Image (cartoon, rainbow, N blue to C red; front, side, top):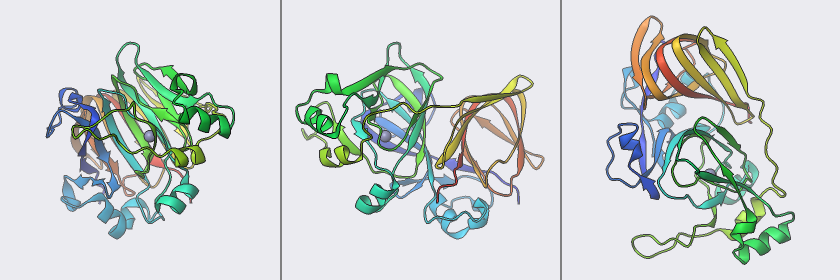
Length: 318
Ligand code: ZN
């Protein structure tokens, strides 16, 4: 049966979180310190639940384990992707993630390559993206002496930009930024620096200096993106990045957009506007904040209305 899987997100409280997942996305939140909406997730730290149809009430990790046909019998023990929306009311910690080899060896889970679509950014908002150390010794020394101003590379960001953050990249999302993140399904984070912040119990969060030095790519090099845009009437499809981990698109719907599956399954998040998804002549109303998966049987679909959507597909990583 051709049926999209609409998903119920999981919300995560963070010391840097805020209330914009409620004010901008209309989600019901338990409090106003919510940093992350895990929108499409089969990770054990927060798994999405199907809201509709044949699989209503099922969790995504369970579908991955027991209904491989939905995913074109894709291999792999874990669902490979995780889509999040992050609301940084304050700075996130400066961090770096391992690659798969290091992650599996030391943490028992995959590494994490991620990418960010900037949904919104206050004027002057900045991210940390890379570093200025030329050697491992220099990186170690600058971290140990807390020479953050010289070590960390700051980049001003604007709404609508896209950043690819391969494993090994030192990074942090700054204050006043909201992003949609597409990443490998991993929760392994090595914290380099946390602005000496304390939580409400007066405790600082753990740092992982040795692991950070081990996994950081030196010197930093900006990845080269070959962004492609294809028009269909007034609508368009932008391909931001295509890697062994994932391919990420923006679908700009202005009227009608007809699409065909490019992979065994597709993850979809509406980040602005409203309209309809049409699959097998069935019409589903969708709007900002709706997240769903188009499983293997859905080979073509139509979008109508005025919407901005970020979609992703698994890569061919083995
Ligand atoms: Zn990260």
